[in-house]
Structures are given as structure tokens and as C-alpha cells.
Length: 169
Image (cartoon, rainbow, N blue to C red; front, side, top):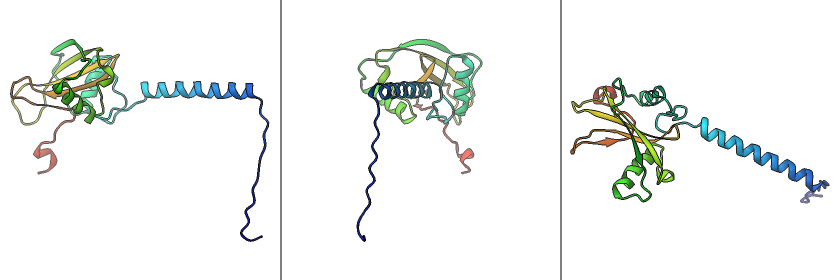
């Protein structure tokens, strides 16, 4: 019997109606679990912390604090913004920055979001006024940036840059 393999065959008779009900219920449960997991148990790629919920001022401030930022007492501005249906070159570059920090505005094209702007009080190495902009849609952070409002200013993602002193140099 060398070189021969044994083959085992199982035969099961299953009624179609109960099988279809079982598969349907499993698919429904799996769908609910996936929806709930992506809605409430996601993590922000920026901070690595649970969820980017931003329904309250406390949640928005906690998110920015998790990225290393301290903020002035009140928001500087709260404004509605429309994410363009078609991205021009500037918006394409802005969205590339969003993608680098774990967000993507393409699925919000044509939607109206709110932009909450806070003044950052602990930006390293500059005397300029620095602002944190959070784009909020349906109570969640969908993007944003840290930067100045000056013509020759700068803008970057939420992560706090290290200074020479912080990096040990």
C-alpha cells in the first residue's frame, strides 16, 4: 500500500430552506458587526487613539491634544464648508496630505462639512499665529490641518513636528 492515499468522502443531506435562513442570518449579523465596528471602534491613523469622534468641543480638543497640541480657550471660527465635487490641483494636494494622515475627502465630494478652527498655543519655534482646522462631517473628523494664515505660511497634518530639543539633537 505504499504510495497510495486514502480518500474519505462525507455526504450530508441538508434541507435548502433552513440552510438559506441560517446563511441569511449570518450575513445580516456580520453586516451589523462591520458597520458598528467601523462607526464606533475605529482608530485614527493620525493619533492611533480610538475614533475621531468630534461631536463636542471636549472631543475635538481631546483629539488635538492626542496629537500634541494645546489650544486657546475658544474656537476662532466655526464655518460650513462644501467639499468640492471636482478637486482642482490645490484640493488634490490637500487631499493627498489628508490621505497621508489617514483621512480621505473623496467620499465627501459635494457634501457640506463644518470647519472648526482653534488657535494653537504651543507650536514649536515660531512667533506666528498657528491654527488647527478640523473638518467635521456627521460628528466625525474627516480631515484637517495645522498651519498659518500668512501668504508665505505653511500647512501640514495634525502630527506635531519634533524640535531639535525634543529629538535630543
